[in-house]
Image (tube, rainbow, N blue to C red):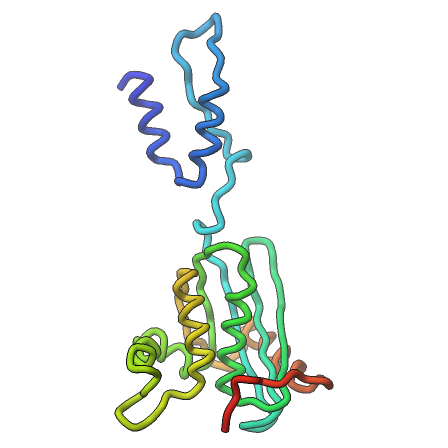
Length: 206
């Protein structure tokens, strides 16, 4: 393999996000007296992987003081060395809506299109997404069957839209089973539900 083929092979193996920097490097190449064959050296400390190439880990949970009642959600987002916690609450809502809001708020917080592994202890969410029920409800005008409407269509629509932006893997975890980040989300959600001056959940209907 001559040097041209070697350079082409190295460039083709790079992530697409690195190509602009490589192109800039090639444009600035200058011939040297010691070598007539240019070489391509890529330093890993200069070329960073794009956000799409790593998996962001998310844990979510929702809580409600009644069902319906005052509710809250919590999420933990782990992106490499960065760890973020988010939470919020509403005056009158349901537990399922808070479980969904936790996932939505976490995905909304991502600044780039990302690969995500989202952990939830809500079978309602995980089964509906993984088994394709939510997409069927959407395709049927939010009808679960010929007579019954699916609940929370506003949040399902937003969650499915976010899943079109991000590559999301939903993973069910058992609640209150000693999983540290899941337990932390539960505490965040409960604390959020107990706050004063909670917002109105405008999408909630009896």
